[in-house]
Structure formats: C-alpha cells, structure tokens
Amino acid sequence: QSVLTQPPSASGTPGQRVTISCSGSSSNIGSNTVNWYQQLPGTAPKLLIYSNNQRPSGVPDRFSGSKSGTSASLAISGLQSEDEADYYCAAWDDSLNVVVFGGGTKLTVL
Amino acid sequence: EVQLVQSGAEVKKPGESLKISCKGSGYSFTSYWIGWVRQMPGKGLEWMGIIYPGDSDTRYSPSFQGQVTISADKSISTAYLQWSSLKASDTAMYYCARRFPDMDYWGQGTLVTVSS
Image (tube, rainbow over all chains, first blue to last red):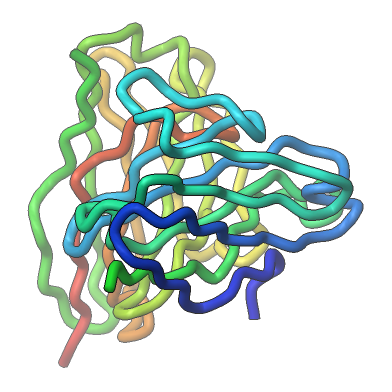
C-alpha cells in the first residue's frame, strides 16, 4: 500500500491527451513539491517533472505537471507510442521523513 | 556529461555480505546528495536513504534503518550501499540517483539476487 495513490493503469491512442493522478495528504503533497518519473521497460527511472511543474532540459513540452492541495497530476498530450511506460509520482513526507512514491501507473498506448 | 555508473549484478546466498557501488562523474560529487532506491521484482520504487558526500551526512528511511549502510568515498566519487547479512527478501534492483528530493540523474541499476 503506497502512501501516494495512483491509478494502476491508464491508456490512450496516439495523439490523445491522457492524465495520471496522484493523491496524497497534508504531510506530503500538501506541504512539499511533487516530482514525476518515467520508467521505460527494462530501464532506470528518469526525472520527468520536478517542483510540481518544471521540466528538466530535454523533456518534451508534451509533458506537464500540476498540483492542487493534496493532489497532483501529470498530463501527456500528443500521446506517442514511445510514451508507453510506468509513471511514478513522489514527494517528501514530513511525518514519515522519507521520500514517498506512488504505486506507479502503467501507461499503454493503444 | 553527468553519469552515475553502478557496479554489476550480484548473486549471493542468504547470510552473506555485500557492498554495491555508484560512481559519479561529470559534476562536483561532493555538492549533491546521492540517494538509493529499491525496486523489488515487478513492484514500485522505494526510497532507502541518502548521503551527502561532502560531509557524509546520511539519512535513512525508517524501513531500511539498521538493514543497510550507506556510505561514500569522496576521493573516488563513489557511493556505496551495503548489507552485512543478506536475506532472500533483499532480492531486487537497486538504483542510485543524484540530488534530493528530486532525483535528476540515475544509475543504470544493480540487480541483487539472494538465493540459496
């Protein structure tokens, strides 16, 4: 049972826009920034979004993040086949004193 | 170019000790936190702890405190994760990553298999 709650799966067709939600509490998302990671099959995770909505250099602007209260979301527009991956949200938790992750969302491009 | 290169896969027996490594290059190793993340087979990511190589300040997740030791040798820009007595449940992929709390560069992972 992960501290941050994500849907286990999501899907879309090429060109569509999909969103992945991440729900937490006042001790994590409610008081700290949210980061998103993309893990392609068989590879290490990659930072996709940091500080709620910032993209590292090289990440396409098709990826965007937002946060409101104790929830966050990742949006992917213009979905491409290479976006098929697992996506994880993460945030520092002030009560647990750890970085907590969501359980991950497996994105399928139909 | 920032790189984190981890040591190779390991196969160990229960009760054995192990130390895996993560060598940083392309940046000032002493200026960034290095964290360790576990991913058990078919499961999600779990944060284990971090170390600041500049002064060896180390923090552990309560779930991993006492189970592993995180260290660093700044003279060779390398961080370590070690076990004194492995268990079958330690079988997992272990990643090191730079920066905290947002981990911007990751190692390729070290697969640790513990089996009798």
